[in-house]
Length: 430
Ligand code: JFZ
Image (cartoon, rainbow, N blue to C red; front, side, top):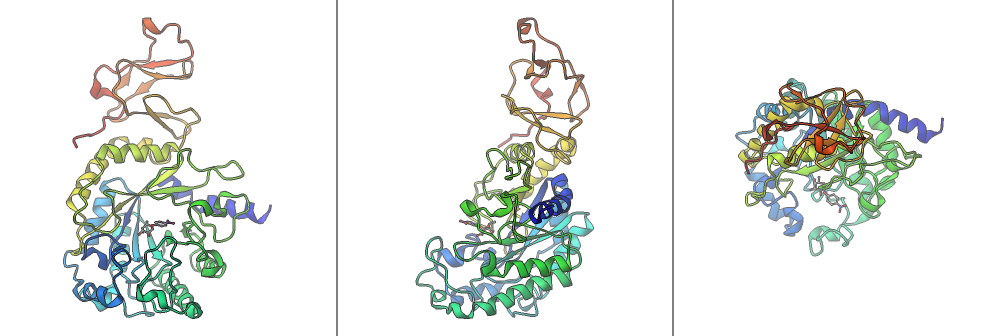
């Protein structure tokens, strides 16, 4: 067995639970919840360290109750959650010994990561942490190239890249803290690589070696390597050790899922926001409807992928009401239809006209997205459909060929007596 084959085999074993669970909660939370203009505010508005400091002084999440977050996630049907332990602004929600720029030194006065982990584990969810490779606060993090980041004129632009090794010691040290002091972590979500800032610039082989020795089972995203066109060796049949366990398409669902060079599916997880921001953005009211979220979840599963759906709690620590309402409706649907999501993946059939299929090998789930004008057609399945039922209530659906469709001999026809008898009644009140 080649090294690449061994790495792919290990990846397959590690990601088994992940591909079964399918649906998780992403949580972007930090000082940026106070300006409430998204987590990139420091960069986009070219704020200096001093400009940003008041948010550190003000940070006081009096309503932070991770047990309420965990309940909302669980009721939404989510099986795991990933919290920003540190985002690009460098502020740590955890009690790192390696910096003073942390929640314990704010009015919060406590380790917010530890409380998050405890609360989510208590609800039976798997837990992950997002850790930003980029750090706008650390004095040894070098300036950005100017191709993607509007950081020119910022004081950080003058930093000396010769001291980058000190940042690497810090970054590796913090990852070691997270993997040592917080019990079993299921996911580590690094973000992100760009240009030269990727792969061994992060001392990625060493980092992964340390991580695997501390927590061999942990699954890691693919952003220690580049993203986008340099999507990384996770797609190849000879991945690097730091290629990651899953690909992380952002704000997009891959058109055809993701297949590796060996023809086998590559684990992936689309990360998607509920409105148009990751961090809390008070003015952003453009929330997706529950029906859209459900259909996007189905789309991910129908392409062998996961959905990591983001919430951005506010400065007090509260998940926005709009987000909670959407999650509640999604959860309502999953409570009745979860068998078509968990443990399911792509069916071998082409996408049907009226919606999507998911399958767990034994059963085929027909997700009817369109209003039907008659029976839905299961193209090519004439001799294969033994019976059909509504998943939500178990009621029988009649499979027969209408008189006007006798010539379509390859196909099966499933009847719906009334519109509300669609396989999956989708809430669409928005
Ligand atoms: C990154 C973060 O910058 C963002 O704040 C959020 O955390 C998201 C989940 O991940 O978003 C990216 C990452 C890479 C690119 C653009 C946005 N890129 O390579 O252009």
